[in-house]
Image (cartoon, rainbow over all chains, first blue to last red; front, top):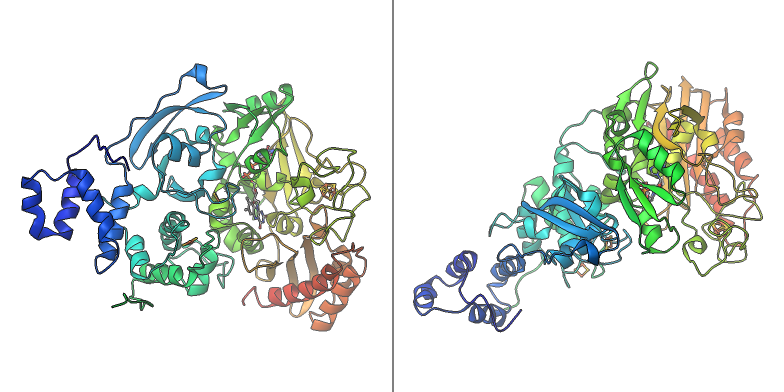
Length: 262
Length: 335
Ligand SMILES: Cc1cc2nc3c(=O)[nH]c(=O)nc-3n(C[C@H](O)[C@H](O)[C@H](O)COP(=O)(O)OP(=O)(O)OC[C@H]3O[C@@H](n4cnc5c(N)ncnc54)[C@H](O)[C@@H]3O)c2cc1C
Ligand code: SF4
Ligand code: FES
Ligand code: FES
């Protein structure tokens, strides 16, 4: 984060976050013209503790673009095989010139300042780059940006509704479904799409009977494991990932397997 | 990745014409295989013709027909919608299972039916451009022959190439008596029986299949089958999910009581194309559906195998997998 902040005032989202976290200090902060820089420091000093889950929410929020970043434009002369393409990213229309070789993953990370989606393998083998395109989960490392014309892309930054976490995000925090967090954006996008697939009655390789008409499905642990097998977690957080998804998918509380120390 | 030109094509005519006249152009469908291979520098097209923007309704749909009880799979329908379409789930559940045994949910959402048939081998020596490989560079030799050939063929290989064809979907299509519908730049259509679509390597392993230059797959047609309630796709792999098959078996049993009117069996992971187990099928015809008969049929088929240095295990594994798949088919696929 740039220390010499060009944007010293708190944004509306940050004010709201501050209000949630430290309501007693809000007035003083606002009156004294508290700067964004201090705010960010404060957030990082607070570190762990009882506020951890809120802070994870804060991280989410801060990972979002605070305003729509301007695309650094390329000109046709700069690109050998330029393709002009328009598509939506998290609800915003984007129109840009890309090198035909650019994947959706690299385009979103490098041209749109949305670095939530991760590059794990770049070969379709890990799921870290999972995004949702026109309602379906896909791998952005094997998708050309040029082929996204007219499509609607959702990245991890677009999963929450403003500051309200998606139930899957909240459940990941409750169940401590990550360690290093590298696979997490992909896991969450994948899980969000999985909910819709189950609702739509889509079967999997481990579904007992496939030759039956479609109806919404309640997923067992085994089903969730199979359906999430395209998302690899090197930290092995699988049991907690499955618990989080099971809780949201079933709508019934699943016991949390960890507690804060002290 | 090397530079390439990217072009949208809107009609079958323009797609086939461009691919015939631009010598180094290739079709781009879901991209899950070709982009991976371009990143590895194995595929080096100088133009990609994106066929996902084709404005032909049928090519993106699953439709009934052309014959009663049959179904036509658009070449650009994706694997997920194909597997989960009710016409497939109810009448061809074997295909549903085979597709869902492959790759991951994300990849199946991207992968098209046409692209699935055209995917290239996963032979590690084919992927490694520093290795000799007759499939990648004809005449350069075969790195796998004297190498680690655990994943390679036990049926139908040649001294030029021992690779296996990786698709799960195709193993089911081989027992479903599918036909592949293709179009060329002159506006002509051609139908290829599925079992004649892929090739054995012979002297020309660079050719995976019998599609001619300039042809586009438009659909895959399935006739009605008589074993929808007695079929199963079994996949044996190194981990429970998201891995290619060591051996897989697609089995369908047409029964009259406990008697086998006709058995249809194909194996994946053992040859350069889906391997129809014709010998086993022949032995089971008219027999009772018993464990002993399944065993005898499996032995007869697998005893013809020619394993390589590191894949002898596939012979025994194949026998057991055939018997298991037939058992599962008897139970209507129920686990
Ligand atoms: C990590 C990973 C794991 C996988 N695991 C499995 C697995 O377990 N089982 C399995 O079966 N598969 C597996 N796959 C392979 C996957 O199923 C294929 O990559 C996919 O089916 C290819 O389809 P596509 O539409 O993406 O093809 P593309 O990559 O777009 O194209 C592949 C080739 O087909 C040609 N082509 C495409 N459409 C047509 C057409 N209509 N007519 C003529 N030519 C055409 C293209 O020119 C290209 O040469 C895996 C892939 C990955 C990346
Ligand atoms: S087995 Fe076939 S694909 Fe593999 S190295 Fe040999 S020639 Fe190439
Ligand atoms: S980075 Fe896309 S699957 Fe690994
Ligand atoms: S949390 Fe580290 S890779 Fe999944």
